[in-house]
Image (cartoon, rainbow, N blue to C red; front, side):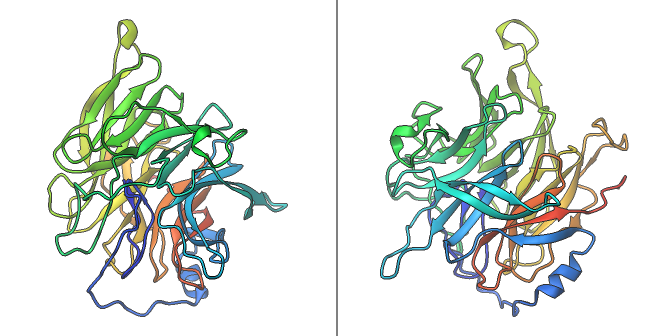
Amino acid sequence: MRILLIGALASVATCGCVAIVTVSDRSVRPAAIDDDADWRLAEKGILANHVQLTFPNRFVKAGEAYFSPDDRRIIFQAIETPADGEDADEFYAMFVALLVRDGSDRITDLTDVRRISPPGSANTCGWFHPLKRNVVIFGSTMVPPTASSPPGYQRSSGRYRWMFPPEMQIVQCDLRTADGTATTLEPLIDDRGAYVAECSLSADGRHLLFCSLESNGGDLFTLDFTTGAHTRLVGAVGYDGGPFFSPDGTRICYRSDRKGNHLLQLFVADLAFGETGEETGSIIGIEREYQLTDDENVNWCPFWHPNGRFLVYSSSRIGHHNYEIFLIDADPGDVAGSTGTIRYGAGVRRVTHADRSDVLPAFNADGTVMIWSSRRGEAGSVQLWVADFVMDLGDS
């Protein structure tokens, strides 16, 4: 689950939480700094050439975007701005769009924005197939979802109201034929009688990684498309979600509320693979788990830098009024460019510095561009931003 927790009384997008989420922050919120010169200066040497990609004239809010493998498109979830006199949709729809670039190959805009999810459905966690150019996957109820009590992580104060509709399942569609109806969506997993979402694919397309609420309040599974095997990877009590494969496919990152203390912590696990028979190359479990954070903050939405040495994530360490993006070491010591030293949870560095929340970061294929969801725009609504990632990662 990649939760979007952005400011007081905000309605938010999530990966793993697809209804409107109410955030009621009772803390004193400092005045937001709207002068973009301030955050551009603070982010100098980290992010450059900032561009806002979505705006309130088209979307009430937009968030959680991921690049296609060729960096030409993005997939994201959003709520469209309704016509005058009409109400906005309650749930997020799924969209794809082409990226517009200038003569220097810098991203400047979006074009050909297309809705690919059915009307009235709740949708989350889109992802491009790594090998099939026109295929995408995402979580969708396909029909209007029913109300449900939120299991797993929640604040007893009522600060967050999450919804995990049991109709949620993982689907795929071919963008050449997708028309925004359920008829062009193909379920990838049989109905498990519970919320199933938060999906991504291994780089070879063989394994689907996802979260299911069928037991323990939220566990991580893989589906091997070659053998058909479903494997539970992480089954700790509490909500484990928001998983992604490392660039080399040997590890996963995720976040967990297994302590039940209403906080989220980051984890990385080494994957175990079968070595004989039909299990050869199949993920059969995890060998070792590493905890990267252990503090009093909500740390969530981890995403790999393509070098496999670092993760970016969002955290409440500045305060619930202003989630910011940070970078943390996740170096196993043996990836390309590594220092040779295992560094899990070290070297935390702040990436974003606007006084409005920045969350849900993701990189393009070579790590030169970061896309994320932010309130830093003039209207203060949650929208998509992109910037060149120029932080010197060096040997730290």
